[in-house]
Length: 345
Image 1 (cartoon, helix red, strand yellow):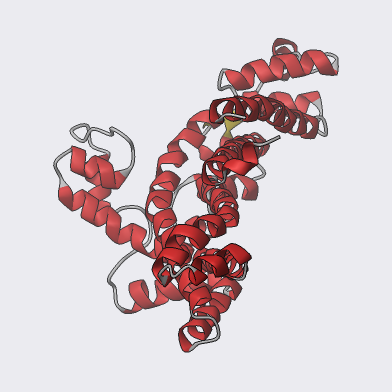
Image 2: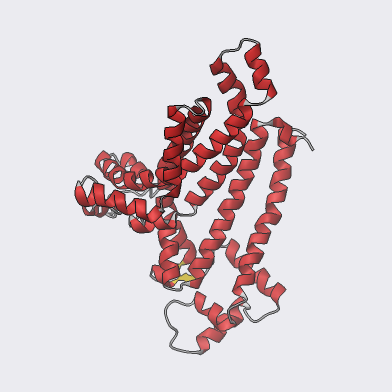
């Protein structure tokens, strides 16, 4: 099977997966009465009870299930997910879009360090099996994987914010926030580090970097350990296979054997982990964003859950399902690129 045919096939399989996600969210909605679901489309508390019944009629909330689903999915596709009362009575879709740039900015700086550092340390640990460097890397990976996210975040804040005063929580300082929210500052992407450069105000970018460094370090400490462990195990398995022994017997250098042969095949399970890890970060790292007061998707979801804002929580769940479905699609395509044998039926 060619690469194009494989991609088309995976995309066609992606559609029913996404359909299944929407059916699951719709099924959860059925646990609520039509009146409760109608309140999700009303800002504040209605003074007239008739408003609820007009909304029920307008959105077909008491119709048969197949008709309800049709009108619900139509609203979802148009971006109408209800009202986010925990975010100031704005549409859920607007609240999600406001949080995405912050989380995406966190991912931009976190993922490269997590993946490349994890792969490098995993290979180094496998190549130097049972040596001092291997033991040190394994000890630190175990410690990193075992640390509770909130605990490591609090330790980082205590040292670098409370003790040394080098950085602070949030996304920007008060001075920088006043500038980026002014009419003269153009919000091209709503990503502070990028918008600061595009507006010719590098001090905004520097200020944003000072605020993002601790969340990035916290995520790297926790997440890189998983990549290291998977890469090490996969690399050790490849190094013990016959084709590696044959390559060494032919006189190929150790660097060529590792980088040209073993590394490529060992990356396959790492691709899966990296895809899921990236999707997890894109859908918001709830604890990290909450502890560092970093107002992204995760912060929004946690705030909505604490206030029992059902439309926002379900909107977030729908967003999570979409991101993970897309991530799995990308992982499958990357698989086929790394190992063409996967495309064979």
